[in-house]
Each structure stands twice: as structure tokens, then as C-alpha cells.
Length: 284
Length: 120
Image (tube, rainbow over all chains, first blue to last red; front, top):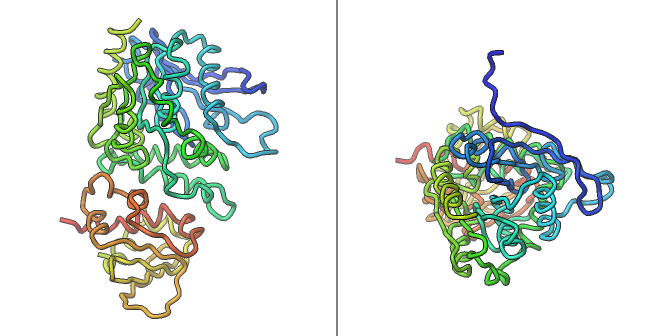
């Protein structure tokens, strides 16, 4: 065998969500403190390929990235053809806590990006004691609906191309071309209505502004890392949320955009490694 | 900048491919200046500079000259890096048939960003 094989292992977990059987795909690498990674709306766990492949992280962390049901290699539940997919705060939070429990992740660090960075804020006040630390990438307390996701799931618009076009612009023009287009590719095979179903949570239902004051970072530390080129969850959006959360630690990542872990892995890892090192040395 | 689009786009197959099913005429406004662009199979067939009176178009994209100038920097600053960045700022308006605009969004983003290659 001459191929270079990554240390990342992909498997399927069978678990119940909302009373329905689900087959959920996840990838993992490393040993140690569980680090559960949440991909962005309309994409899948491949976005965390560099984190899963970083020995500096995997020597201390068991990194797990799962594809949310309906995304990537995780199927929707039986009967999906009869209704629309729509993500909500409760569904998302319950999904994350169920996946963590069923995969045996004890007090994991949870890191999510974009809609994943939003739900991290919900976890911060609902499940702080069950989590070791939280890392929000491109976190905001609410999303402005500046374009209409109606067109992302329309029979006369190619959903893959339209979703890819939305993702394309959110990245930094300074990020490497190949990594940017790979990130676009992760958006193009999404199921019909899945990205827009996630955006229901991100842009409509999941407004968490009124709950930010309930977050206690002395129970569960909260790190917020945001790329400066993101106009969906901009540095100003992250800073506005952080201003209402005592103890939240904000890093603005110069030259990065909305998908830092995927669009420019090397630059992102430079920001993430010290955060994970601090979590490892200051939390139990 | 807009008048250079035929040579910038038509010579770049990596842009043309995303518009290969597009056959439409659309309006771009750079402040007061109007440009009517006709696309045939992903190639910019013509750019007509206004003023235009009673001309038909499928959709229009309108932004101030200052916004386009910042958008067309070789390396645009955060907030001016993408057509939807201008949309989020409220600096661009889309009118007309949004379906066609969204069907060719990736193509249009690449076409309208192409003048960055000419920036100093």
C-alpha cells in the first residue's frame, strides 16, 4: 500500500432523535479530551478535515465531527419525503447532547461554526455544567435575513450552484484558492431545502439576544473566534454578542472569512491551537 | 471597468462555464452610469453604455460608484469583498427577475468581480 492514509476514521452511529431512528455519520481522530465539532448550515463535517488531521491537537483531544441528519453522509429519517426540513434551537441542542452522550463523550469541548457558532451560545446557558468549554466560530446572537433563502430550494434554480454561490462570497479573498473552492464544493451536494432549513434556525427562530446575560463563563469558558471578512456573522456581530457575555474571550482572525477551519486551515489552526492549549491547562 | 467585461470574461473559461446556460440581458448601474449587458451562453455578447431609454432587461443590479470602486479593489476590504457583502450593507439593490439572478449567482459574482484583475 503506497497511498497516504489519514488517521481519521469515519463510522456510522445509530441513535434516536425526536423519537425517530437516525443513522448518523461521524469522523474522529485522536485521544484525550473530547472535542465535538459542529459544521455550518448546509454543509458537513468535512469542513473540519484539518482539525482532525492536526497532530498538535489530536495528541491531546479526541476530535469528533458528525454530519447532522440530512447533511453529508447522514440520512434524513424515514418519511423525509413527506415534509420540509426545518432546524430549530431545541432540535439542534437536543441533537448535539444526544450525539455527545451516545458516542460516550464525557464533558466535551464543543466547537461550532456559523449556525454551529450560534448554538454554542445556547449550549452555554442550557448545558454549561455538562460541557468543559465552548468555542464559537463566526458566532452571532441573531442573523439578519439580507437575502431570501426561498431561491435556494426552487425547482427552477440549481440548488447546488446557488448554495455554492452563497458560500463562495462569505470567504476571504486572501484564503487559498483551492481550499476556498473545496469549501464551495461541500455546499453543492446538499439535499434540496437543507441549507434553507438550517437558515430557518440561523436567520429566523434562533435569535438568542435576550438570553446572552444568562451565560456564566465561570462554569463553562467561552471562546469566540471570528474571521474579519465574514459579512454574515461579522466581527461586529460577534463583538455585540460578546459585550453581553461576561468573560467571553474574543479573537478577530485577520484575513479569514466565514469558514475559517475549511477556507484557510493553516491560518485557522494558528488561532485554534493556543485556545485548545488554554482549555486543556485551565479546565478540568 | 464594466466596458472591459467582454474581454475579461470571454477569455476565462473558468467564468464562462458557470453561465453557459444563461441567455439574458441585465442592467448594471454604477452610480448614475447605466450599462446593459447581454449574455449569450456565458459569454458577454455586448455592453451598451447609457443613458438608456425604455430598454428591456431581465434584472438590474444597482450600486453607488463608491461601492463599486471599493468592490473592485484588487484585494477588497472586509465588507466589500462580494456582491452579497454589498447586499448585507444595503449598498446594492436587485430588481426584476430574481430567479434568473439567483440561478446564475455564482457566474454573476465572478463576472462582476472580474475587473479586479485590472486594479492597481
